[in-house]
Image 1 (cartoon, rainbow, N blue to C red):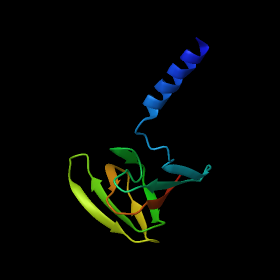
Image 2: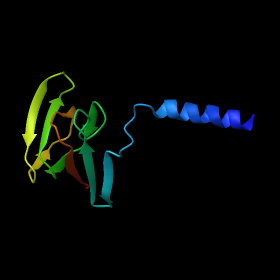
Image 3: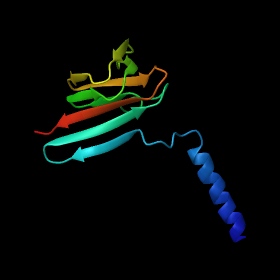
Length: 115
């Protein structure tokens, strides 16, 4: 009976995680009283800097790789951006969906200043 219960539990856990990307897409590098720095990685056809439609406070983005991103506004307007490795871009607070439409993994650093 114990083996059967463990087998059922294993199957349920497997089903619950089926299709999920187990690679961590974000890594907090620094989080102190002055700044928060987060590294995001986005595989092709996956989110770049947050899941689905999401919100960011004002921040600096630094591209660690080239990135080809489809950005969708809450109103459904789409814009494609090609960001070169090493580019630094300031973004005001906003909401969007951002998907990697390139063929390679994209990596971005987002730097949030705390006031």
